[in-house]
Image 1 (tube, rainbow, N blue to C red):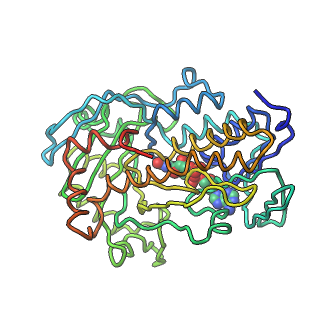
Image 2: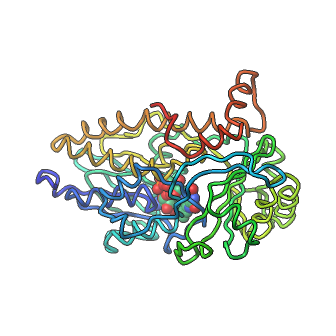
Image 3: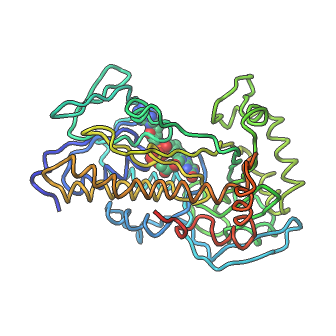
Length: 413
Ligand SMILES: Cc1cc2nc3c(=O)[nH]c(=O)nc-3n(C[C@H](O)[C@H](O)[C@H](O)COP(=O)(O)OP(=O)(O)OC[C@H]3O[C@@H](n4cnc5c(N)ncnc54)[C@H](O)[C@@H]3O)c2cc1C
């Protein structure tokens, strides 16, 4: 229900991806005026990869007014399996889960927001706070103001860089190769043994996982979907990472590289390694993926989420956990829900609302990052101490990997 005292309040949301869209939809439902400012000029295109869902994500989708029964959110799998290097089933675990894709979820959220509230091509360059409002200035010289500014502008957040410049992402010592292949391009055997599962292959010190997601036009039927893979591989911060992230024009990228610029020899070497190291079903997936891409694995932990009297950060702008917990989108959604709850509970006191939001979400963000760090530690290029190695080893048995990856348990705030 909207509250009259908030009904004239206006929020400026920076970033029109998951956190920004959830915040905008939820705020509008309690009577705020909201505008979303997104740097990218065109419709955001999914990086073409999968997203794991958790129950909390469905709760927030419902609160945001999205009927998840009518709009299929993703593909369901009954459980998990590990394939050994010969392709035999080395373990199975019943664990039903819904897997979706970034593009599908983005479409559901974006369609629920009136187009007039979403502004493409608006690149925030500066935030300034005043006693009665906060002002956002964009690179084209325009500016807007509101009662509250929400920095939902991702891991390299401009809002955070300006107001908490000491908080930066840290490279974890390994990368993920990612990609998607059409189910119908796979052999019948690989399709049968992989495509209905959340599946793993576990070469020493590495981890390959994959699961089905919607097809190129959101098809959910068996045989029409795509299979999404994520292959974690150690890469020391020096030579190895530099080699992966030096593009076909010889330009060295710091932490990410456009997929079309990955050098052909880097992709060819990765495919050879897939044949050598992975279960044959997975090496087929890698071979048939036309445009694999590389993601450096990073940790980001913010000591605060309230960055002024009228400015907050949420989603990836505040915390980025390694993908092993599969929490990025769910965490962004829950951050937005907690912010809106706190605003509702403190209708006359913005500062109290923001601090209540921070108290609720800061420990959770830190706990997710910590948990993901443990799960991924055995893939780091260098593991510093014997204690770290002992901890790391606990998370690499097939049973542990199946039970611990992309589940909400084990995250103690
Ligand atoms: C295009 C895209 C595709 C993705 N695909 C996948 C995927 O396939 N699988 C997966 O696991 N994760 C994916 N992610 C990441 C995942 O969605 C996020 O980790 C998570 O959901 C948290 O979302 P977020 O909104 O906090 O941050 P993000 O999703 O990173 O969104 C931040 C948004 O802020 C915008 N922005 C940044 N700086 C400015 C600025 N100065 N002014 C205005 N806008 C700005 C960015 O363009 C971006 O749209 C993707 C993200 C994006 C943006």
